[in-house]
Amino acid sequence: MADDTNQTADGDTGADVGHDLEAERTTAPMSDYGMREVGIGLVVALLGLAVAFGIPLLTV
Image 1 (cartoon, helix red, strand yellow):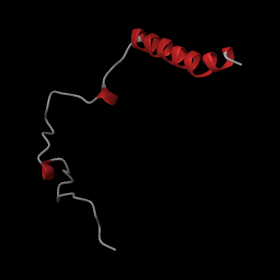
Image 2 (cartoon, rainbow, N blue to C red; image 1 turned 90 degrees about the vertical axis):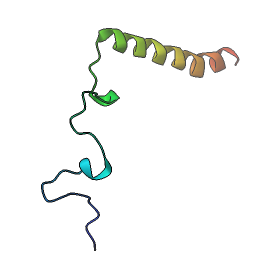
Image 3 (cartoon, rainbow, N blue to C red; image 1 turned 135 degrees about the vertical axis):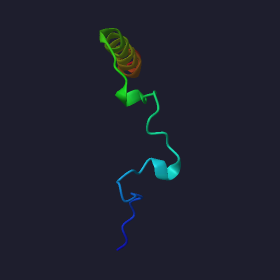
């Protein structure tokens, strides 16, 4: 079975496909978030649950 990893001799896989490993940007999972974002997510989740379960229960 062939090794499908694209690693070079020094283990740098990002340079093989043109990624800038020294960039000053981050992706969403790496970004910090605070209690404000957690609160907004909780409100959105509760509204979604109210729509998904509350409205059908009211129509019964």
